[in-house]
Length: 269
Length: 100
Image (tube, rainbow over all chains, first blue to last red):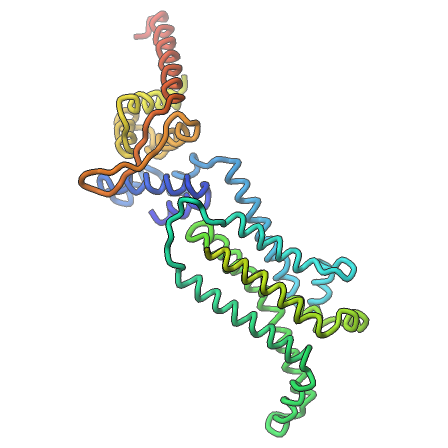
């Protein structure tokens, strides 16, 4: 029954899926039948649902899934490799205009429209899994802001702080370089792995609870502010570095984060 | 007339006798067409819903949880009449050939 429910919710429009599941709960339960009997009389869960698929809504959903997946996948994969700036610029830069945030906002808007609350949807508490996921993503966003502040805005204070620790942990320059190097690596790899997880959250938003879309929206926010920061840190272009300005990144990330947080709140409603 | 149309005719006929819930319809159809999987019959029933020939509503039962019932719509009644006419024409044609 669980497999049948998943298959129904993935392939059928939400209301149709709920009606079919309600019917099959009756069919499966009256009279109680063994798994083998059910397979013989009904077929495999996937085959049970296949004749019920309506092509237009199903292919529309698949197209939406591909579009949502593309937004998070492309953004997340620009971070794979230390030359992220090159990837990011190749994929998302148009002159001095960055397409990364545009992709993220498109993904957020599409997710919010697609996974909006249905009129007749009963209210239920937010599942723990979603809350934990959102908390982890918020910590990640917080760390990106800390990195921005420490390395880009208050770098002198930051370096001085490391300098105080020099007698304990070795020469300052080497340590700063190493910590930046490691942080940047982490910031490149995290979006890469989270982009795959976000695809799974989209599946959960379809088959379990539409509020998993909130995790997708916040993941897009985290990925794009991370990549904007990484792009700036790993850039070898001094003119761009000066022109955009070290301090300009923080307000830009703040605006994206505020939009992402509002989107997350809307998705949770 | 295909087997699908025959099953559709039977479903509409059963619904014309009164509202019924999914399992009840499927069980009776499965008895009449034992070589057809219940899921295939159910797909035809849902198809009738999508086409507006039948509609679903939640009904209360005295001794159990709320169940989803199916009932015939006006367009379902018209479809039933059309299929019944086709069936009678087919019967007459077969009778003319000496097939009883």
